[in-house]
Structure formats: structure tokens, C-alpha cells
Length: 230
Image (tube, rainbow, N blue to C red; front, side):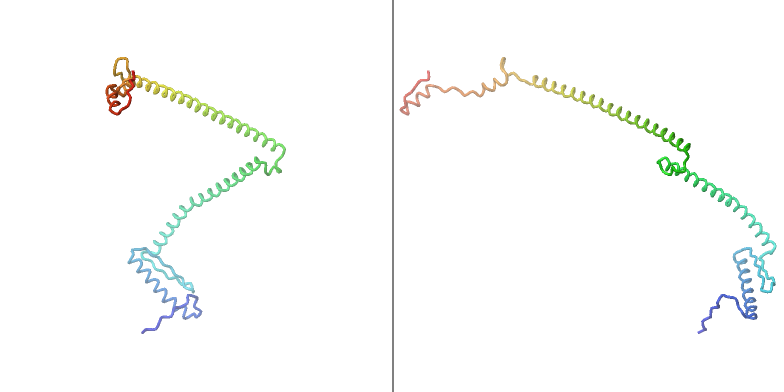
């Protein structure tokens, strides 16, 4: 088995000869990778390397001047596109600062209207604050009175609606009672002239009279004295 390859620590090589050998090997490998990248991926690659002694090494897939010109053009376009963003950033910062100041000023006025932090105000400022509060209080009272009147009007309107509904229900009940009375009169049936159904019923259920002769015969057979009912 091949021995495990030792990893080289990534730091400056102190030995000059070893450093030059490593530079030469890594430079050739780097240029080879750049060439493969340009061929395999159809990329435009430009690579520039200066040695520790200042010697220049470079690789370009087409022309180094063409690559540098293209890089310069892209950098200028990038700066132009970033310029509005920076301007917008400055505008946003200014707007944010202005809004913070307005918020702080409004918060201070609100606290002063609640009676806080009044020591820094002059007599004139206090008088102006008093007028503002009086005006605001007048508007509040006016709005409150209007709200109360509106609620009273609404309640009165509901009361009248309930009175009308109550009257309507009473009329319905009276009309239904009259209809029931009329139906009761019309349903009374007369069986005989001058007799109602009650008189006919009472007559039909009267017990038939007993023959006095039968009673007398029964009394004689039992040896009882017979008393005539006449």
C-alpha cells in the first residue's frame, strides 16, 4: 500500500529554494487548470501572477488586453449601478432621521398635553398650550353632546316602533276574538223549532214513565199494600 500523503501546512515556506520549487510547480498547475476551465466551459479566462522577485507570469484564453478591457468595462457598469443604490441609501437615512425627529417632537407635545414636562415651557408657550387644550376640550364636549342626542333619538325611535307594534298586535287579538265569537254563533244547531241542541239532548235523556198497572200487579203478588200515586 502506498503511504499516506502528508498534508502541507498552508503557510509561507521559509526555505528559499523550496519556496521557488513550490512556486514553479503550483504556477504550472494553476495555469493548466485555467486553460482547462476556458476550454471545457467556453469561459474567457485571464490569469496574472507576480513572483516574489517581481517576475510576471500570465495566461489568457484569448488576449490579455481583451480580458482586461472587458474587466474594466464591467467594473464601470458595476459602479454606475451601485451609485443609485448609494444615493437611495443616503435618502433613506435622511428620511429616517427626519421621521425620528418628528416622532420625538410629537411625543413631547403629547406628554405636555397630558401635563408632563412643562418646566421647559415659557409663559407664552403655556398660554398657547392652554388655548389648544381648551379648543380640544370644546370639540370633545361638542362631539359627546351630539353622540348623546343621537342615542336619545335612536331610543325614541325604537320606543315609537314598539308602540306601533303593540297596537298592531292588539288589533290582531281583537280581530281574532271577534272571529271566534262569530264562528261560535254560526255553529249553534237547532234540532226542532224553538229548541236548541241542549233542550233536545235533555229531552232525549228523560227517564220513561213507569206503567202504574205493572206496579200494582207486582205489589199484589208480594202481599204489599198498593198506594196509588194519584
